[in-house]
Amino acid sequence: MLTTAVKAARKAGSIIARASFDVDKLNVRAKRQNDFVSEVDHAAEDAIISVLRDAYPSHGFLAEESGEKDMKAEYVWVIDPLDGTTNFLHGFPQYCVSIGLLHKGKIQNAVIFDPNRNELFTATKGAGAFLNDRRIRVSKTEKLQDALLGTGFPFREIEHIDEYLRGMKRLMHMCSGIRRPGAAALDLAWVAAGRTDGFWEMGLSPWDMCAGALLVREAGGYVGDFEGEEKFMETGRIVATNAKIFGSVLKALKAK
Image 1 (cartoon, rainbow, N blue to C red):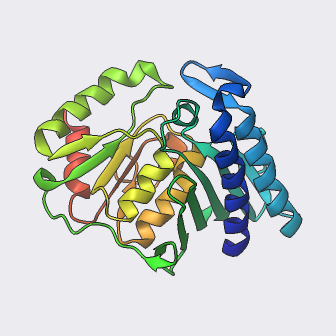
Image 2 (image 1 turned 90 degrees about the horizontal axis):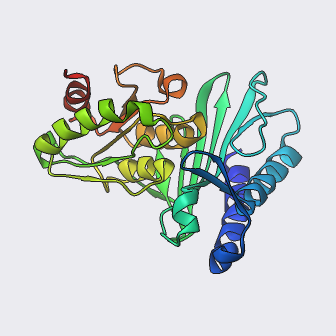
Image 3 (image 1 turned 180 degrees about the horizontal axis):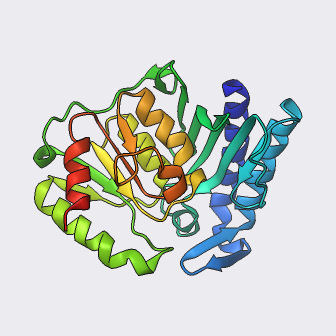
């Protein structure tokens, strides 16, 4: 199943890479405030679903653009064909394809493909996380004061901006730096690879988090919602860090 997901992700990545040379010619529409979709998103998602459905016709899908939400099947593919669409449309090279597989509601497989760097992140539950077939691990940073954190602004849920900024302000005083690249799935993959020590965001959808969450866990990291619990797929709030600073980040976010 992981091999098939890799095939699907690479096919979508090829579509995205070709389209990146003619972004100004694409048809783009706003789904809601600060949230855009292009014909490339749809083409990439169609390609992914086609590959997966041909191989596994009984599997369900939870996909961002097509509206497919079959969560009753034993196996469900959770797909973001182009995470970081706004970046893509501006030629900002930080976006990816994200494919996760749920088995009876638990994340079983993960694929995140960055077509700009030709970086393929993969994970299978219990078998570790990999970048281009090389094992990856989260960072060994022990103290929050030495940590580089990634984040994402709640641009889809502006009503939560004050809450978000309070947490961000606290963490800015407590860590060594904060980055906001703009593609949550790739941000999580970078935590798994040890490029950042942690990541937090609110207002996300399951397809933003599914694959990346498994990557972080299989790389030895911790993942939870803002309470440290397992409900991040339901709440849209996620904290993912190495094992050393998880508690400190949660404490900073929950402080009044």
